[in-house]
Amino acid sequence: MTIPVTGTTGEGTARRQATPFVLSRRHLSIHAPGSLDTFDDPHEAAARLRGGRVPAVVGALPFDLRGPAALTVPSGLHRLPGPWSTASPSGPVPECSVLDRLPSPDGHLQAVGSALRRLRSPDDPLTKVVLARSLVLGARGPIPPAALLHRLVANDPAGNGFCVDLTPAGAPHLGRTLVGSSPELLVRRSGREVSCFPLAGTAARVPDPEQDAAVAQSLTRSVKDLGEHAIVVEGLRKSLGTLCEGLRAPSAPQLVRAPALWHLGTPVTGTLRSERTTALDLALALHPTAAVCGHPRAHARDAIAEIEGDRGFYAGAVGWCDAQGDGEWMVAIRCGEIAADRRSIRVFAGGGIVARSDPQAELDETSAKFTPMLTALGATEHAPA
Image 1 (cartoon, rainbow, N blue to C red):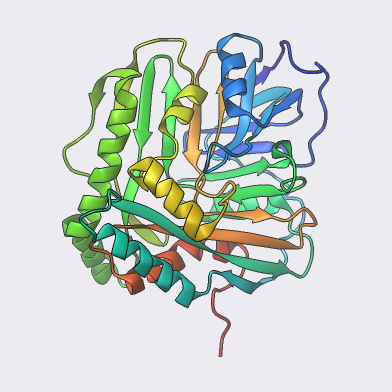
Image 2 (cartoon, rainbow, N blue to C red; image 1 turned 180 degrees about the vertical axis):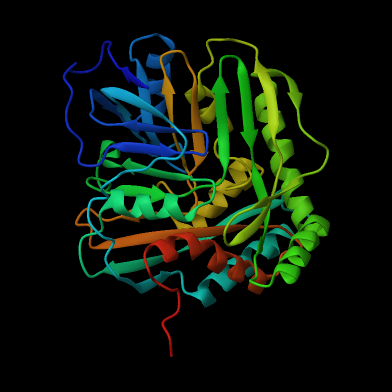
């Protein structure tokens, strides 16, 4: 179904986009070409949506909401049943190889060790912090965002994928594109019904079916992973408590299967207290959750800024919201940022660090989380000997 977008915007005239917005999900895909206006301030975009001054917003929120967003008022919302697909991807994905590691594996081990000293200190309020690293890959030719998205969606049994032009965020994001295949729902609003599905607690899958089943069962009994997951769910319930009533969540997480990983996930649902609260309002209230930031939020966010610097849009949120306030926002993980010249891409992976964490296991977890992007790019983290 195609829904034309009309309403008061900055200029009122649709402009073409080099990279249209796409969010692919198992149940529904959103394709939003054209731009009537843009916002780098998500709170201004949310206020205009609530006031009926813009008819829809799509795009990306940064990890740190004090930074610029990349939001667009599209000229139309194409709602398609099932995962996104295209009959003619815009050219092949070129061969890619790793050029740099930020930080190095040893640097990441040192960062985790530094975080553990804080987490194990009885005088420090920090109980969880999510630390990430990235790989910079060079390509033998231009990387077409649509073709990379096509591979990611095709490789994911759930059909998850997203593609966002980051230009509305301004320099240094001009011409850059965020592409990924996130399994984690931040929030969905349909009428007054709200749902979230946080993921925290991860184990790498193995090829042997019996061993893989044992890995999954071990994850469900892991004191470290269950504790990490409980922090995330409790934080989400507190954030939703002022906006929703009748919050519901099972007492124990469920196993979530992904191509390369097992996750622990808990569905959380509730009913909005006010119909004026939009999906974008909800995303701004919840983000960043403890699943990608830590706890307490402010302490974890500051620790991440000190250790990693500016994350930009990795571990932010990608989604859409229409004039009725309905919409869906995914956590921006399992993703990469394509450079403006499309000759390189920086891919990201992180993991939650708690007092029981083991540095080497945390490093191995990030390597497993690189898999979806590296597979789609035809690359490996470590070159063959």
